Image (cartoon, rainbow over all chains, first blue to last red; front, top):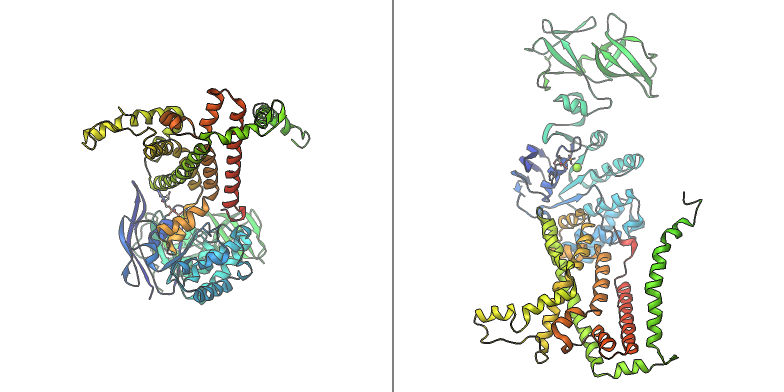
Length: 352
Length: 283
Ligand SMILES: Nc1ncnc2c1ncn2[C@@H]1O[C@H](COP(=O)(O)OP(=O)(O)O)[C@@H](O)[C@H]1O
Ligand SMILES: [Mg+2]
């Protein structure tokens, strides 16, 4: 069993706190992404798990055994680096074989496992070449093959696709998912790209300023962000946040009355996904002033304001809204997130 | 811009080419002619005179011995220093600065520093005496103590010439991204394996430069030897100097100069071949 327990990890660089008590549990065989903007501490956390960095306090356990204090090689994990770190002076074969050679595996096993890993990542044709002659995508495959060849219990990846161009990134993303699903390795995947995290992960841990803001299934995080930061960071366009008045426990959206959560003040923030709306005639619907309408082919993107606060919504491509129009919107009440105007945290809705 | 005026690059390098031609190629040709001629006609008489001199074999042997001992020790020390300093966080610059002080000292001055330490009334003897190791002044630099003399010269040369090797190697080490070592560490390589299998191959170009530079300089060793051993420890450049100044025989001195050049070129070629840097295998 290779479940990973990250237990109240803190890390300071001098006076700067890069990680402020991060806790996270990753189940055996699970794919979890650490997602967050640059500088939020993802790499630092990954390097602490790998043993390349020491934590200021806290514990990391793999399979219920504390690994803090163990050398990286004794932790039973493999890692894929952002800049690949494929050894330039070794052939692709020797690169993939490196971990096995360090384990003093016999030649037959080295050969078998290198060929298996190379097959998974389609790099057999390059096995006797040097990495310098390979493209970024091919080097990336070598780095992943090198990691998989040792059959690690835990695989750590630090922004493995960020150095690839957009098209290749999409292709590698799909391929990684296939490869890792078949390997069944517990994986921690660091990225700042939300689409990557959404597409690959069983669960996502969204990080911000050295804190895990929310952990959950991609769809759950998308639909029910725990904080304003998560809602704004995930999704394209990001979630809309509209401050609205509350009267008698109700919020008016056009003529419709939405039930606000219990025990809130005079104001609440309504978190609205851009696509959780449909067109409604005016005065019934909630009024939106459209500043720009952008037909995107697959959908229609509208930028404008509701209650004088900026919003972006998405309508089906078939709708004919133009820049400058004023329209009415019906909100999908099941997909509304209520947030506290003070703390920015979500407030559970009243169950119907 | 330069496409319209293709002669501009040539114009810009002209001064340096002219300078080198004047001050390097011309004397080189003159020296070779001086070495290989006698009274205006080609001749091997000077070479014969050099080879039959009693100091010739000794100077060749001494120079080679010194090179073989000094250069590997310098490379090893520089690698150790470079690796250690790369682990240091704060104060790194200061340490490097202190280590490179010998770079700023001329080799004659360096020889004199070591002479003041090792001569009969020097600091070394005073220290040994005060510790009770020796009862009276010992002599380290005479022709009767050739091994002590050799060690003294080797130590002085190592002290003086390691800094430049270290500077080159530190520059080489800085070029190696830390992820290579970290990847090796994660995949199970211990410190020695990382050093031999990852670091050393990756700093090959720097190593090659350092080896060539140090070996060529080692074959030209003179001032330190002269200060410490005088004529008790003949070396090639020392002999050239003696033929030129003591014996006033410029031709034999020229043969020595040509010989030193040939040895240096040969050493360089051997390094270039043996440590071939394949651009394909660089980061
Ligand atoms: N060795 C270090 N010394 C000082 N500060 C560091 C060091 N490593 C990382 N940091 C700081 O810690 C924060 C988190 O860094 P990092 O984990 O690399 O972020 P991420 O990978 O999420 O972009 C950043 O503000 C970074 O500047
Ligand atoms: Mg990072």
